Every structure is written in structure tokens, then in C-alpha cells.
Amino acid sequence: MSEVQRKKYSDKEKNSIFDHEFMPHIDSMYNFAYRLTFDEDDAKDLVQDTYLKAYRFINSFEQGTNAKAWLFRILKNSFINEYRKKSKQPSKVDYQEVETYYNSDNVDYSMTSDLRVDAVKDMLGDEISNALNSLAVDFRTVIILCDLEGFTYEEMAKILDIPIGTVRSRLHRARNLLKDKLRSYAENMGYDTDEE
Amino acid sequence: MDKNLNTSSERKLNCSDESKCFELLESILDGEETTASKEILDEKLAKCQPCFEHYHLEKVIREVLKNKCTKHMVPAELADTIRQKIQEIK
Ligand SMILES: [Zn+2]
Image (cartoon, rainbow over the protein chains, first blue to last red):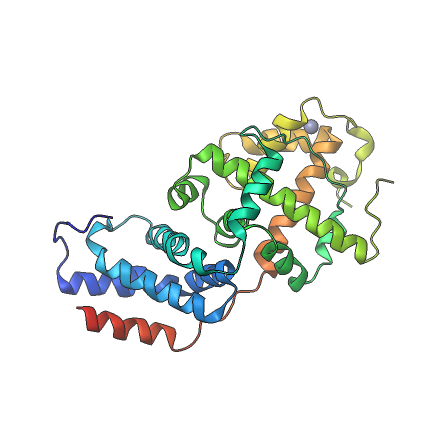
């Protein structure tokens, strides 16, 4: 976003966009921020910073385009630039380790999981949530964007500044890691995860 | 009972191209494939056991994520604080 921008909206229009296109997404924004930071105060600051930036750069928002995706992109960038540094989460390191482990742009989709549908259905919200939260931030992010917020691959590519192919492969890896977590929960719950 | 869901004996036990099939199934579940995907999907689920199992596991994973990951309540004062700050920078 450039500091130099055309004045295209009047104050009245700005307020209208802010109230009708930006503010309705505050729930999703806060939820995303909380799942990135795991801290209520950090999440509040992150959402607040995002909205202030959104207002300041409102002229670079095209009316009629996806405001939610535009806001999520700002939030994600703020998180990377400001919060990730001070965050106690060693997420960047984690991610690199995992990336090295998988070490490829080509994902093998044929890896099957012996996790059972019934075991997943019986899991509690806390278990699902903890499994999601345990993923490295880049993997967690794609799942939040896709499954919790319903963004398309194309929207996710814009939010994350990565190619669609990378969205697809990262999402696939993220879900496989999640399945690994869920499988270990299922084992603890006494589900037989072996093939019959 | 729904015949399609239970007659696994009619499905082949090995998938001819798991990698391609699973990628396609996952794209369909993510709403990325629209053209003719319903037919392809029905065909695969009816004829291939690994595809059938993979599809249902992937589907339930998406469902529990969507339905069971509770949203954190937005602190009540946050929206007001934001509006106030906006007034200050105007
Ligand atoms: Zn198949």
C-alpha cells in the first residue's frame, strides 16, 4: 500500500464503507487474530491496528471487491511485521523444519490415513481446536482461511501473497498434519486406528 | 439404507491413481472444482474404495473444523475503541 494515493472517497463515503463493509467482519478478524497470537490483548491490538490501517488506506480499497479478504491481508501482514517478532511462538522455525521435512513443491496426495470418520466425529471442540492450534502458524493460517472462514484458493493466494499452487499444497500438508494430531487423540480415546 | 454408502463390495479396492484422485476430491470439497465435478465424484465414490474412504475422511475433517472450532467472543468494547481511534485520526 502506497502512502501516496488518490483521494477518491469523500468523508461520508469513507464512513459508509468503514461501517458497512469493514466493521461487519470484526468477529472473523478477532477470531483470526486470536488464533494467530493466542493472546486476548495481542489479538485486540492486532485487530485495532488493522482497522486503523484500513481506514488510513481506504482509498486503495476498491468498492465492490472483497472487503473481508482485503482486511485479512492487512491483518496477516501486520502480524508478520509486528507481532511475530515479539511473539513467544517459535512458529517460523517450526515451519522451516516442517518445510524441510516435506521438502518439495509436489505434494504426494496418495498418503492415506487410517484415521476413522467416526473417531473424528466424536471429537470434542476442544480437541479439534487444540489440534489446529498446535500446527505451525503458516499451516494453521491456511486451515483457518479455508475451513473456518470459507475463502477460495484465489482469495487465499491474495491474502498470503503466494501462488495458488502453493495454497493448494500447503493446505494439503496442513490437513495431513492435523490428521496426525487427530489420530494420536483418537488413539488416546481408545479408538482402534489400525486397518481391520 | 442408502445403497451407495454401504455396498463396498462393488468398489475396487485399489485406486488406479490415488495421487490424482485425492487431489481432485480435495479440490471438490474445497469448492474449487465446478465443471462436471458432481458426475466425476459420484463415479469415483461408487467405484473406488480408497477414493470413497478418503473423501469421507476429508469431508468430516472440514465439517468438524467448521462446526467445532468455536469462535472467540469479540471483547465488547473493541468496536467502540476502534471507532474512537478513527475519530482521533480523522
Ligand atoms: Zn480412486
